[in-house]
Length: 231
Image (cartoon, rainbow, N blue to C red):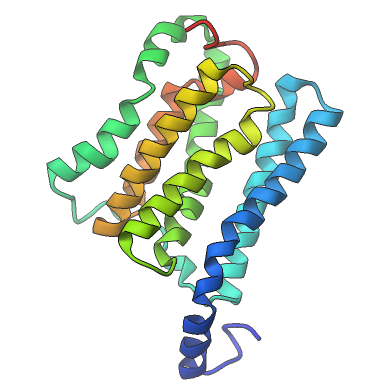
């Protein structure tokens, strides 16, 4: 039974009844991504295995979006608005959008000299794609999770942070990388989900996430061109 072939009153009743099952949806994405990671690292060199791993991750997110639309009847088409307006107050922007975006800035300033120009282009391309998928799922779908704003913020931030350990530890085994990553992604998750609970505009977290992926030199780190193990 899909959203297209049932009446609106029935759809609303089913949506309310099924909504609590949304809580399990992140674990589907985590497990599917884990499978893609395990296949990739077993058949590809480390510096290339992250590519199919992320493709698997994005496909898992797309599947979650389809399930959310067809089974939970969520208005997925409304998750990403078309405008930055109305512009939030500066205090909200500073605390929840600007500060998270600047968390990796020290690593960027100290390590950018080691990155060739072509990888700067790759970083920008990746940073345009990755935030759309991640924010669409970890903040967009999580906006519809049952419970209070406090629960959604904590649940989203915790799983968002955990996801980085769940598959990143295959590439980054050093605690000097993993621990700061888990802490920073948890802070980002809280800030971005708090913003969503207040402003309901996913474009701002996407923009903030874009700068995070640029400043952490994402592609260069995955390829092993830049290492923060001794940073």
